[in-house]
Amino acid sequence: MVLIGLYSWGIQYLEVEHLHLSSKSPISNVSMIHSLLGFVLSLLLVFRTNTAYDRWWEGRKLWGKLVNDSRNFAIKINTILADDRKNTDQIARYLKFFPHFLAKHLSKESTRLALDEDYSEIEEYIKHHGPSEIVILLTHKLNRLKKEGKISDIEMLYLDTQLSGFLDVCGGCERIKNTPIPYSYSSFVKKFIILYVLALPVAYVISIGLFMIPLTVFVYYVLMSLEMIAEEIEDPFNNDENDIPMETIAQNIERSVHQIMCSEK
Image 1 (cartoon, rainbow, N blue to C red):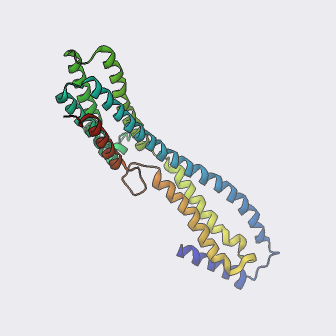
Image 2 (spheres, helix red, strand yellow):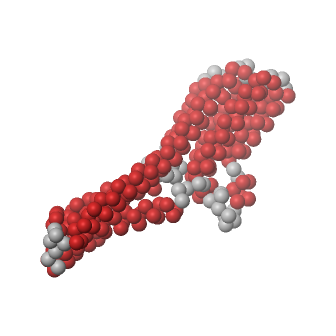
Image 3 (cartoon, rainbow, N blue to C red):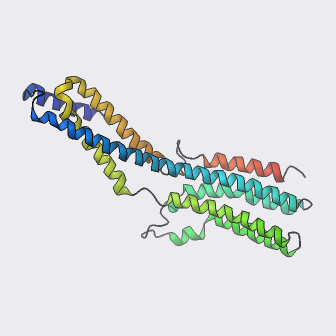
């Protein structure tokens, strides 16, 4: 911002003090082109911020779905296995672990690089896929209870559907994590903002004068802030201040499952 301010002052000195240009100078016609470019830039920034926020909001909806699925699964298991506290408590532990494993999984750099052709640790990533391991344990546990006659075929059917929802949430979050906004697009928006701001004092300093210096700095601050906000929220699983509070939601799920399944001993 300081450099932009110095640049604006340099343009003001060059055009007004050194070249003594007036409002009748041909360079004042640049303002018309600049206005058109401002309209195009505004459309790009709206699309950029909306796309980034859609990714953030989709991630939040997926975690909200996980909260609901966990509660529904806990209620059904608690009803079906009402007289079997040992197995109920074991399944409750798995349900409590899943959101914490998912949060840790999404925070890893390996998850972001999973679709990278040059990623050399893909086998290690697949081998230690925490959320899948929890679902596998739950599936084995339910199948064992079905063989023991504690879960009927119909109950197993809708429990399996509910269980699949956990990995649906995981897959949706992974799609957001390892499919970033194309670098060429975000890079183009940054270049467009810089060129637009650099042309701003050239187009208007003759008519506005020294007031163009703070105005140029302010415009640069607003436009670049919008781009930085979009960068901040386009990956909602980095545990930054403005990201989805995954660990907080995981703790909320843990409390809900405990209240539903472990309150009766």
